[in-house]
Length: 59
Image: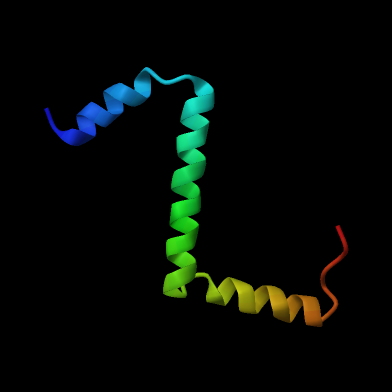
């Protein structure tokens, strides 16, 4: 059995809350990696351009 299969079987035994916690951890990890690599820079630039052009609103 591969490590991935072992992880899948372990995840199947988790509660919904525990799965949500793992999902959030993986999401955060991916966002941090993408930010560090510059992959999100284009999105940030676009958001700033739209804000400067008055195309945003307060939340």
